[in-house]
Image (tube, rainbow, N blue to C red; front, side, top):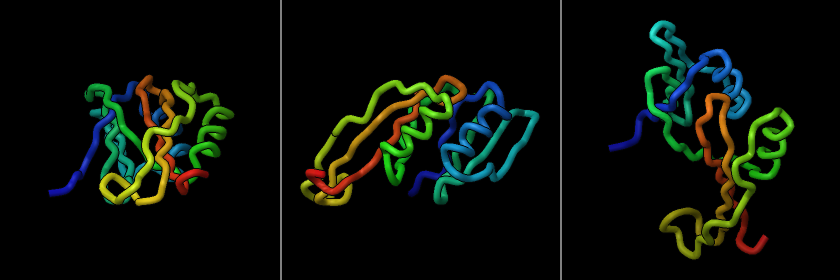
Length: 124
């Protein structure tokens, strides 16, 4: 079994499309309006932005957390929580051994909270 799709609430498809295209660095893979659906591909998992979906909390891994957060801040995104160290991976059970996991949280264009996750070598 594998995860195939995650749905996130949206109010305005155009606004959400612009926000997530910038955040993910890719354009939507599908749009159906009506009924108000917008899809992005996250390495084989569909992110569905849906006018009828409830809000959910999703976490997205980024290559450079501080750089991504700076770019989002410059574009006007609301930062809910600055980066914080949440876990040091001493073994490979939850992530690559020898890395520190950092998280920050933003609000997307639709008012949903999105967690951004970055990993760095331990002790960096």
